[in-house]
Length: 424
Ligand code: AMP
Ligand code: GLY
Image 1: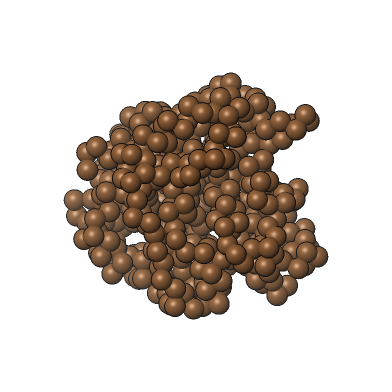
Image 2: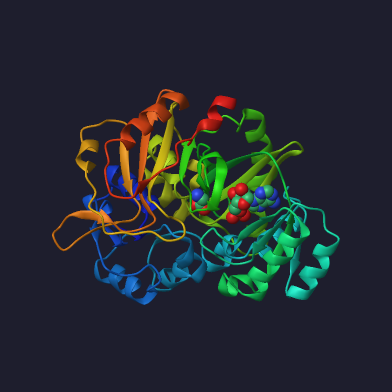
C-alpha cells in the first residue's frame, strides 16, 4: 500500500515508525514531515492546511490510505475534503472533530449524555463571564473555546486572576477567534491520565494509558507547553478506573456522537482527571497525543495499518488490540526558552547512537536538514527520547541515560518525567 501521513511532529514520526513496520506499507509519504521522518518516508513540501494540494497529491500518487496526525486540519475538515474525492483517509470528519475544536460543544455533549466532567458554564460575551466570576468559587478554570496550541486553558487562583484571564481570552483575544466563546469550569484535583482509543463510529478500543507532563519546568512549574514528556502505562489508571471509564465515558461518548449524527472515526483522546469522586473528563482530542503517541505506539503489538483500515471500514469489533507487558518513558529535548522564545538552527549530534539500540527511539519533533545536509534544531520541542523497560522505573532510567547521547546547543529538558511513578 501507499500511505500518506499529514503532519510534522514527534507524533507523526512515531506514526511513521509504526507504519514502516507494517508489511502492508510499500511506500510512505509525509507532508510536510521532518528530518527524522525522512528516514521512513519521502517528505513532500505541502503544508497540513493545504487541503487542495494534499488531495491532488494523493490522487496523483494513488495513495491507498492517508493518516491525519494533527488537530488543525481535522477540525478544518481535511477528512471531508479527501472523502469528497473518494480517497481513503483515517481521522474524524469535521462534524466529529468538533469534539476537540469546540470545548463548549464537548461540554454540552457530556452534559446532555451524562458523561462525568467538571461543572461549567459557556459564555459568549465578556461582560456575562465577568459577572459570573464575581460570585464563583476559586480556583476556577477558563478555557478558550477553540484550538489554541494547548495554551488556551487558564487556571485562576482568585477573582483578580480570573477577571484578567477573561480579559485575555475574550477581551484582548490572545488566542484569536478561539476566544469568541469561553468555558468557565470548576477546578478539579487528582491524577491526570491520557487514554487514546481507536474508533470506527460505533466501536471503541482503548490503547494502553499514558501520562503527559504539560508544564515547562520541573515540579510542574512554569508555563504550559505541548508536552515535555510522557510515561506509559499510568499506575494510577487502575483496573477499577479502567472499568468505570469504559462503562461511563468512552462508549457513551462514541454512542453520543453517533446519536448526534456525528459518528466518530479515528483516534479519540480522552484527558481524564482521577478525582476523589471518580474519573472525570478534562478534555477530548480528535487525534493521537503528542508526546503520548511516542510511548504508546512503541508498546503496541498490532499492525497499525490493520487497525486503521478496520476503523475506516467499520469493523473495529474484529480487532484485538494488544500491548506489550512493559513500560515506556519519553523525555522531550527542547530548545531552552520554549514555549516563549528560543533560538533554532543548531546542529544535532549523537542521533546515530539510536540505530543499533533495541528498545530506544529518537522521535524528531522540530528538526530539519540545513543547506549542508546536517540535521539541525527547528522548533521548541526538538526530539522525543523514548526508552522501554521491564517496568516504569527501568524505562525512566533508560530514557534519561539516552538523553545523554544527544548534544545540541541550548538543549533543555525536564529532569522529573515519570517521578510520580515513585508515589504510586
Ligand atoms: P485541557 O487542554 O483542557 O486538557 O487543559 C490543559 C490542562 O489544564 C490539563 O491537562 C489540566 O492540567 C488543566 N486543567 C484543565 N481543566 C482543568 C480543571 N477543570 N481542573 C483542573 N485542571 C484543569
Ligand atoms: N500531549 C497533549 C496533547 O497532545 O494534546
